[in-house]
Length: 516
Image (cartoon, rainbow, N blue to C red; front, top):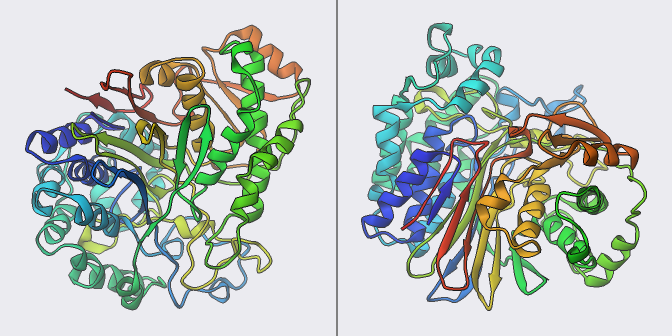
């Protein structure tokens, strides 16, 4: 079973499985294809996080594929500024971790050659593919940004024109870059021509990363965090990922009996929203690179702490919390193969189209993830050299009796733990299959990015009476489209009691679920 937010990436994963590859081969193929066919959401210039289960090992492992700030990148570089720019070369201050993530997953468990796994992505980049409606919509929104720089404009707004949905979209430079990686592996990106080309472009345009930063980059295999929810064990990435807040929310919700709460009722939405807000307060106070700050995960993930937080939820009224700015461009996908191997992963450029800067002729759009660092020396996530920033990316996996039962995740910045919570409670507490859980109306509280807000955005399919009840409880409600991308593009795979996989793809995306 393969699920992803673009049907061509899903098909590429299926092709790799049919070719004799395993879930790890297919996952890297999907990831690479998403970097080509969903370039507004993800790319080689971004980061990735991975949860994996190998049937031979019998355990869940995690890989942190996020990059660190450059060794010469410090707050003094931004003297006179209130914040790090969110676009342009000065926002591209962290080394991209994507290619390192591919190398780690494929190198540890892959069965096919790296060239075989990257072939579909190379083909789509060189021969083109029909531009998705989602890419077109985001290109329209970011037209001025994409038209500012010649290398970027030549790809995304050629002759200052926006390609139409369904039009062939070719990325010749990216195809050459991917071919170099297919032939020469990870070192081509971090120690070879690609690194030199990226750094030369950045330094010629006022950027801060160096070749030493690329050569020094390394991702990490890390122990995943876990917590029990009902009869499942749920796994998330540890910090610098916000994954632990997803576990905190579930720990709080486990104190409530959903059998007495009607799905889709005002009580249901109110409870989930309030659990999210209470847990976000803890997250915002501590989350950063754990190498630079102690994060009290044992206390935050304890059932005792969850009980104290649950007691703070008031059934008769909404609480308040200041909203932070989060990026929303991300792509989640998952793969399970016939042997029981499973990969749940997510990747991102941060904002849509990241920094908005393509690194010369490489075709690589650089992320702006580093712009989330604070310039306030007292802030837990303040900018320092060789540091990883607070990261919204958080793939999830729930196991039953020690084996993967549900792989799930979504794009959407601050919306990720919210949508994950909706999906898992719908599948575990209300017995829905993945597609039903994804199709149901969703919500997102706060801002994914943009102006500060404490809005509770509700899809318009939600019962009007429920919307009125939530307003009466004190929520600042705004209805959005019936199937609105602002609530994320969620995907999931679940294994039923007979061992069969069921996949769900979000109708709000261009995705597909494919299994046999």
